[in-house]
Length: 219
Image 1: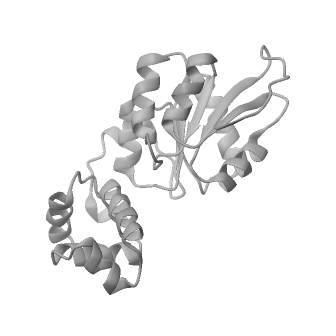
Image 2 (image 1 turned 135 degrees about the horizontal axis):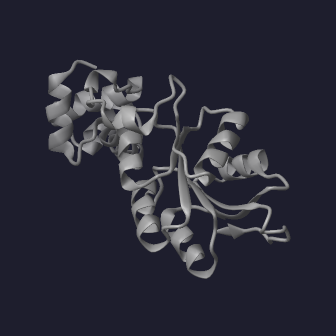
């Protein structure tokens, strides 16, 4: 966890923690949003690092990715809302599926932004979260919390990459991680990452759930 020294006037700034397991993204988003009124006081690599930091110092807003090691973003949201209810939290993720956004909002997130968002949209979202408003945006369209929660999950709307479709097809054929890795000429760790991403997108909790959903729809 990299912590930056805070020399700003806290009464006039929004103190923020950013959590993401990709160093380049952390550095990029920190540079993008930092200003005289937005003070990034810490960069964390996972949810647990955020909680460790919050034990020692209050922050106004946590901006977090969803898919992180040790503790993921959804779990982090739930813990922050329970332990530090005054701290706002906004998800900033590559996932744009409605059911994932809905899951984050139901967990207690104050906002959800796509990593495809521009600087202006992210800054507007930060301001909205701090005003107590919901800031929810994806590349395709903007949603309100109410519209998301009232929308039934449709697996036909779920977007899988070509590689994820290949992995899913092999899963339905009962191929092991080793078999999938060999067939696609990728590592077992990469297979595991693809399976985790597919499960998150489809809302499945295990391999059996993945197979059941895959058999319902032709991706």
